[in-house]
Image (cartoon, rainbow, N blue to C red; front, side, top):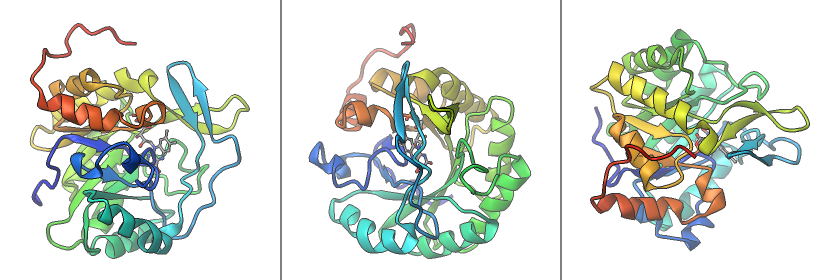
Length: 282
Ligand SMILES: Cc1cc2nc3c(=O)[nH]c(=O)nc-3n(C[C@H](O)[C@H](O)[C@H](O)COP(=O)(O)O)c2cc1C
């Protein structure tokens, strides 16, 4: 495996730290293990109709639709600022086809300053978003194989999986066999906005399920680094994932409530405290 590039176990979750510039007003991006960009596609995507984010009990439902400037716009307008801010940059990629994933990996996987790619195979509504539907393990493995080929030496390949209790360990095995260095578990879960449009549910509401999936993957693949993601609101939540076998975590929705969350969790994890056992699940 490529060397582990993250100097501490707390990263931002894709799409939740904006372009990094706003988040940098609340803490040093260099103090985080890594900054994961929103998912970048080959062409620009305008994103879904408003409203795109709605509060729900214990979480958010978003229908951002992977709005992003496309790979050319990202390399021109976003990556340089992130590198100037000292972030350890992980670029999330999403594609409409195997060929698009391969092209994104070829371009970004050789870009100076990028420490890792995160292959997003966990969009809550891939078909509705027009993205490749890689929910089956063999499809997921094919995407990862097509990305692995052209990465420069030392570039870590993360694969972000949906927290699907029936398939997650099987899918994780398939992507690791295809060349993933680590897996991220998981993403927002399929849900609907009040007006019925498809979206993804994130935040505290999904933590128990994501935690279970991260634990299952860690148990099934003890040699594979697992990064837990889903509903991490404070250091105890992060510790619960670490205790379940994850080696790092990503913080998403919590940043919309309080943009200092990831910085605070990173600091708190450096201090020894009681384990999370017994904490009420909010
Ligand atoms: C507004 C918003 C935008 C998101 N955009 C992306 C994205 O571009 N790519 C991706 O892989 N995940 C995206 N996610 C999912 C998060 O990265 C994360 O996996 C998910 O929200 C679960 O973690 P959380 O409960 O801590 O938010 C987004 C989530 C939200 C709330």
